[in-house]
Length: 408
Image (cartoon, rainbow, N blue to C red; front, side, top):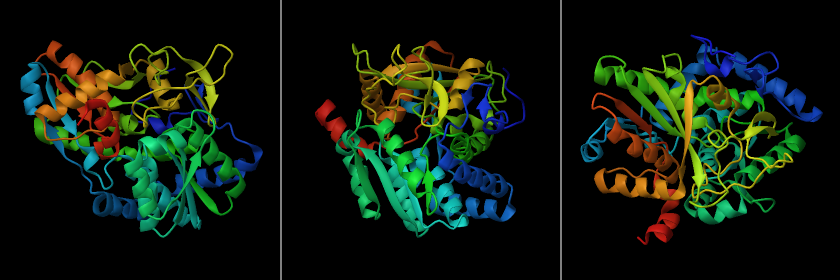
């Protein structure tokens, strides 16, 4: 099992849709085989269509606001007295997070497919918010499935979705979080695929949805590579790209253009949700030794019991609170191209407080997990080491949680 040079990771799967021969695939009911095949053919055609690419790039620039900025966190760097800490401010994108890239591409695909309805799932509310925004922009009717627990803890994004005209379907089954929302969304699409396009909010699910999402968020690393070369005149000799990992969409997008580099030069570090200190519950299948399981149409490392039942997860971050992960990240782990660790709820909160103290940025609880790892390792590294964190979402959606936890 080896990574191939000069071939995007989204395309390094076999004919059956598996990365490394065992991660991914398309475990779908017979009724979805034709819709998935049609979507696959449409995407493979359009991703090489100059007119479609021009249209995508137009909306990325004029609607999403690409490129987002690349900044040095000088005050934090001075405080930690070690490696230089930089941030790719993807939270500047229209709507406040990276999810807008995939939502925009899915709406463009839905229009090309002649669909009038689009449906999606959401945990932190960002995928739902962005999909509702893009659906409104492109004249599509939108339905969002969201766990009842997440509806309560991510109220600002719920309000935004409703303002954009989306119908929000509360999911009361299971843990009432992202995993259950994805399940209900897929069940709905099975019955309505003739008229409805489905947007999967992360690099999870059947093979084609992993590819579409990864292809969309790869815009982040395309921008970053140019920005790094502009700032340093070349790719530095020691660079660490740190990203939070739930489903894995922002991390793949952040790393995509750098996967070909030697890991001694460009290290990829993914930070999963370790959950509350002292709790056995977490959302860290890659860093906590989870076994391979089937979840939402694909094989990946999944938090599960000894009997193979999906475990409940727990995290202060709704966007990372998911028992599975992208098959591409499983492949990156097994090939040892990327390193995966976890941060607890408490560590993420401490990182958020420190960032707010020293810098004028407001990262959501998802990238706060990544900042936690950067803060942990920076003092141990030389000043010529460059750490870049993907600040992939803003904390507006987390204001109620932060107020409750921090008393502010």
